[in-house]
Image 1: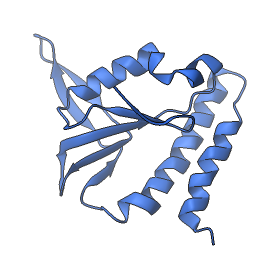
Image 2: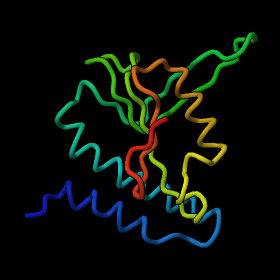
Image 3: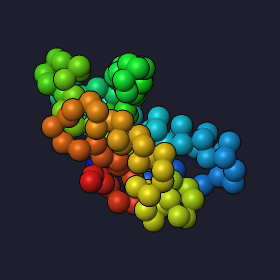
Length: 139
């Protein structure tokens, strides 16, 4: 018997089969896919580990000698129990539509820069992306 949570997770896969025809549609479809993925995480993971998982938390880090602030908002963060400020592992969903990005999502310059910024949060594991095509990808 299929649970509602597994059905939502399956919807992510179905949404990934269809891609829009332009940048605006890519963004809209990406937002829909993220919404379904977040619902899946809430139903399948967050309910089991409510004190150790955060969805889209915000972190402020200082960068460079000037001390500029960089606001980071990863999709999923595993953290110390009840301490979202102590990130341990960081995950970001990617739903690439373009063929080149589907075959190697880590090759996208924006994704590389994002993962480098997430590494500044000093987690216990390298930041990872999650794609329907490859699952979890970590350097």
